[in-house]
Image (cartoon, rainbow, N blue to C red; front, side, top):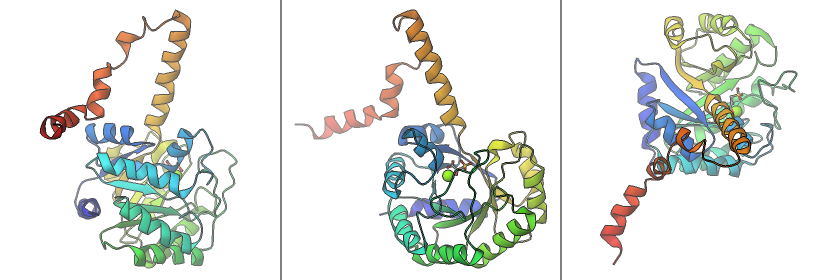
Length: 292
Ligand code: SPV
Ligand code: MG
């Protein structure tokens, strides 16, 4: 197993550029993200859960998320930040998950300080229960000490703002997780304006770079993030999932209304585009070389 993507991601995090990544549910979407020029893929628990038509509430198993992540790693050449939710249980589950996700080709592993089973972060009125700082620090340490490649990036995510526990608690937790060995801190917010996240950023005095997910405060641009500093990764977690839902609903409605596919055919990518994404030309070259 090659761990080169972890090394690549780590060195890019140490560089000057703000890295942007996009949340995906499968390998096809991961390819599109790479082709569009983004820096990394976020293997999104929310999107993968949605692909099964179920809530993002620890319902799908670690193996389902792992296999989705592995299938992405097999076909893309940008790093994957694997959303490992709570680590799928306690610190013992974390040890198992880190080995599995690292071997599947993840360049980074992100874990959040919610209680397993979790509820999704942006759900109004969602059940946002956090584990103790001590318990989560143990999980971070377990992840750090389990990685085989020291370059595997461990991202500790605090949900203190999501749970409504305030800035002091979020900052305290972030400092503890950095002390436990986390390489980056993901600070999540469901506030509809960027003020909450900007306050956290300005008050953060740790060395670990920050990671943000601006779904609920989309007015925050990359230029704003660069100005604020300290943030190295921005995750656009579910925009292409939502775009796909919208596009598919529109086409479905039109096919139903038109009584056929004659009105939609020119409006959608041709089948040849799917061949491209499947790398059929690579297969054809192999056929020429090896089929006798
Ligand atoms: C995900 O995409 O799975 C995330 C981001 O963790 S959020 O859904 O906002 O929690
Ligand atoms: Mg998630």
